[in-house]
Structures are given as C-alpha cells and as structure tokens.
Amino acid sequence: MLRLATWNVNSVRSRIDRVIDWLDRSDIDVLAIQETKCRDDQFPYERFDAAGYTVAHAGFNQWNGVAIASRVGLDDVQITFEGQPGFDRDETESLFSAPVVDARAIAATCGGVRVWSLYVPNGRALDDPHLQYKLEWLARLRDEGRRWLTADPDAQIALVGDWNIAPTDDDVWSVEY
Image (cartoon, rainbow, N blue to C red):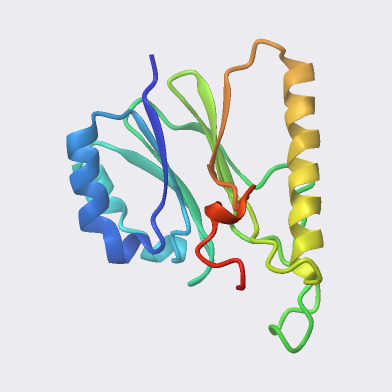
C-alpha cells in the first residue's frame, strides 16, 4: 500500500523545517507539494534527500511551483499535462506577450502509482479572466484523465493537490474577497 499526502506549503523554503519534521513523523511514502514559490535551483533538495526522499520539482519564480517527494521511487517525471493551457497575460500584468504555462502540474510514477501534484489556478471573481483560464485548465485536465484511463482502464493514477475549489461560502475566508 502506498501512503500518499498532499500539501500546499505556500513557500517550501520558508516552511522547510516544518515539512521535514512532518515527514519524519508521518511515515508517508509520497508527498505532493504545491505552491513551492521557487525556481528549480532554489528548491531545498538536500533537505529532502537527507530525510530519504527523492524530489522532482517544477518552478519558475516566486509564484506557483509543484513538486513530488518520494521514498519509493520517482520514475517517468512529466512536467505539465498534454494541452495544459497557459494564461494570456497582457502588458499591464507582466512582460509576457504570449500565454504562459505556469508550473502547476507535475507527475511521476511512485511505487507503481502515477502521482500528479496539481495546483489548479485560482478563478478569482466571476468576471475575472482567470476564471475562464481555470475552467479551461480543469477541462483539459479532465480530457487528459479520460485519455489516460481509456488507454489503460486499470491504471493507478492519483490526481492530488490544491484544487482551488470552494463549493460553499464556508469554504472561503471571506465571501467579499
């Protein structure tokens, strides 16, 4: 049996002591991590290695970032899923002129299970363009999931992470924001 957990750490570098302490106490095999907020060269790989975990990470800057830490193998690492959309940022939001595929999805096979660490975009407000981005992102993930299971109906796949979905007002800090 594979013991799997997921954690939006909201900056792995700021919380590395907590993460490693928790791993030492938890006896889990695989940890899917979201919102690492660092580039690959800034990720604290050595701390995970010392705790007995191998890590695959995808991150570009202080935003987003996903990782998988495993002590049961880390094979066939894949960053992004087929058709994963990017967000079309305009000049007022960034220097990019084309849609940017954020570091929001990473997969690896760990102990025979295909694990996806996902950080679903936040849709923000109903009239915000990020909502359409989020809906498209989820639709493409759904389509890919169907494709994976059509290709192999017995596949062991875990889609875990921060889904940024709040079905009721009780699921958010403030409904005004």
